[in-house]
Length: 255
Length: 192
Image (cartoon, rainbow over all chains, first blue to last red; front, side, top):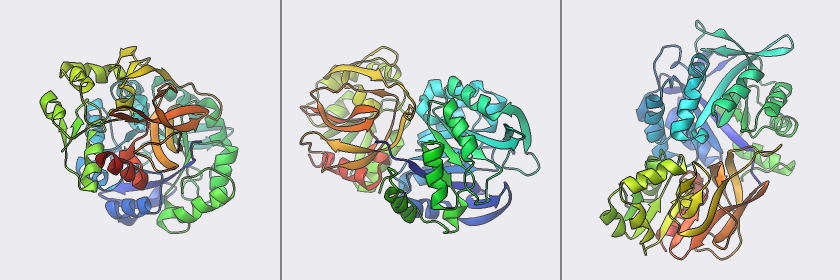
């Protein structure tokens, strides 16, 4: 049986790992390779690197650190940040990343999802979605890495993820912005609705701090993986403790 | 020396780095003579079956691969290419292991691609495995459950995880991305 994936997210800004609260006020938390190696040794199932400055500035993550990570790390990892073309994606994937994730560029040019899937296969193409509650609905935001450039995309979250799947996305990472950095738990209701729209894997993001949060999102939203950043970086939750406890509670995890 | 067949896929550097970490010499090659004279051959693959077969044929590698007598390990798509045919792009493959690779269908609670760490359970003795372990999978097509199957993973249905026919081995998962379990798997292949 497929295990529930525990994913550590490393937001990269200017070559170091940072973490903010509600997408603002970023603080440096450590070096890329050092953190990646530590999480690998602790048994993380996957790593996601978000170059959060890349997309709004119209530039892309530099290739060198991707290759350095690929040399050292023997668990799968995904790279996100300003990937706007097949050429951009090729450079990252050929450097040794397993997947690339696109967010704002997919909103501006949805056809990019199909292009990437046709060349690399849909298993390499992750679509990241930053979603905010609006009344009884959920809205997609873009350029969320920059306080000055963040804006509504005009798309509804549940429609957009279904479209992304149709276009060839192999996985969706749904970041619930209201929860991000709060430690109050995942948006289980939104994630359950998202899960019902998709046949591809769905990864929960935003709000994790406790074992209960992971248990709930796996059981009640049925997500395939759950991502956390601050809770792991600050040591509020360690990956081995989390996994042992989830296993005790009857969830299939890799130990 | 281990030859890693350049099948045009995107995970070639991951496979090279895995051998680098193990301290085992390996080189990427699309030259039939180099591949034929290597002690072991690795056939990686990410992408679509039809495109990978086109690359192999263009480099005159399909005939070369069929004639190899040394241990060969196909990884993910590389394992699927060992079969007769794949439904993915209706591709004629190498025809080393009988059967057709077919699409996996999604159902509630069963996302496709089959992506993530799954428990691999041996079904018979296999030189590459030592009991049950977790490996990392990413695929939407799967080989048939036939005589070549050595170990399985469960994702709604049983999926061949490790296969073997004579000197040809296949892993549906990615040992190069499967942490310590993957390292042990690759080491056993090297030591065959």
